[in-house]
Amino acid sequence: MANIQIETVRTGDFSMDYFRFGHGKNILVILPGLSVDSVMKYADGVADAYHVLTDDFTVYLFDRRKELPDPYSISDMARDTVLAIRELGLRDICLFGASQGGMIAMTIAIEEPDLVKKLVLGSTAARVERKKSGTVENWIRLAREKKIEDLYLAFGEAIYPPEVFSSAKDMLLSGAKGITEEDLFRFGILSKAVKGFDVTEKLSSIQCPVLILGSKDDRVLGPETSEEIYEYLKERKDCELFMYDGYGHAAYDMAPDYKERLLRFFTA
Image (cartoon, rainbow, N blue to C red):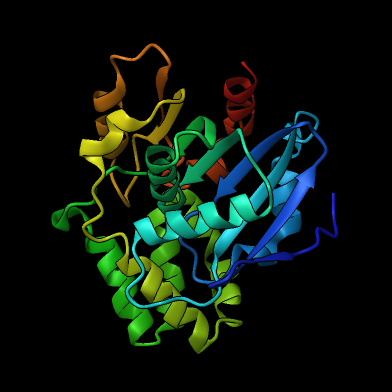
């Protein structure tokens, strides 16, 4: 699969890039995590990675809005993403969010229960306490100081397993070469939104089936954050937890069966 076109949805207040692929009758919305540059650059690779879902789903992947205010909270991101989704006429969606995208996704499921049919939360948290935000604080500092290569290496070291990070250093440094000051500015605003995020007391408002996919060796948020979400929802028969081991925070990219697990849950 190749040559995925980047499209833009416009509302009265902002515009947001997205791309779509697949030809299934069901709608799947993917909300990616933080990245220094836009995931829109990697649309073809994403479509290839999720090809197993394309017979059953038409998949939409949304970026964050173009015109970023500062500050810009997770709640703001959720609101704007919902506006973009509704502007495109999408409803009864399956929703998958990874890392910060998972925070946005669970906020959408809380605030807009009529919109979400099923929810998958990957390597994410319902709250980020100050003592757990040191990794993100370091990213923010490096972005502010415009230390692009250091930022890329710190980011990669945090999200990937050690052996993957070791072999990916050259690739990360190559990717750092195309980063602009605007990219760093956006990354700083988006990163700050994670600090102090907390929807734990609202998790019971989620009405749809939920699959939580965590990682025992998550060095960004820690495995306990996925387990905490499950603790709040485990009395429900339609909530599941699965913990990977050996794939790091980026299990959503690294685990070979991740997309098949999404497919089984969303089509069950």
